[in-house]
Amino acid sequence: MNNRETAILVVDDDADTTKMLCQLLGLTLARQHHCFTAASVGEATRLLDATFFHLVITDINMPGATGVSLCRQIYENHPNTVVIMMSAMTDINYAIDSMRAGAFDYLVKPIHVAQLTAAIERALEYQESLMKRHYCQQSLEEEVRDLFALNARVRSSRSQKAAAEPLRTDAARNKG
Image 1: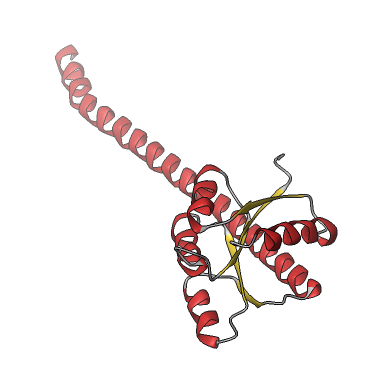
Image 2: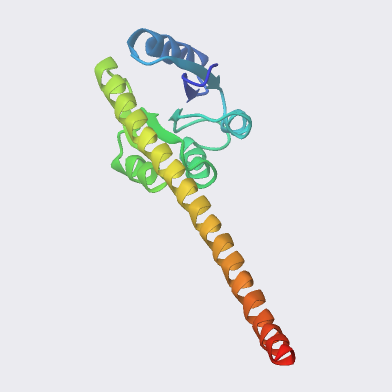
């Protein structure tokens, strides 16, 4: 994967679903991307800890931990990664739980290609704005650190100058 490719992680315990989604992304997504897959929350967590992902598309119901718990974990530990939840669950409470866990969007299976593509494009645009904010915040923090360092040097220089002033005055008196 090169730096210009978008990294997308698809998480679902159904291998056919992950394969189909990755193929679908290859056919419909306009930007260069690399699609990774994980069959469980544990596998997804290992991948997330090893690689930066711009987007995670995850199912909710999987053996062991749920997609909602994965979403919460991503929101807390990888704040610049955007999550789209997908599920066959139509109960509004699943969508609410997902959004409260930090999901960007919630799609109900079966997913229509146009709906998925539009959701991914919106999510990736949002992710770009998160990254811009992150870089601006880092730059601002660096500028503030530099200003504090400069301020400390100026204060130190003033203190040294003030400490040397009485010595100069005494030396001038002794001459005269």
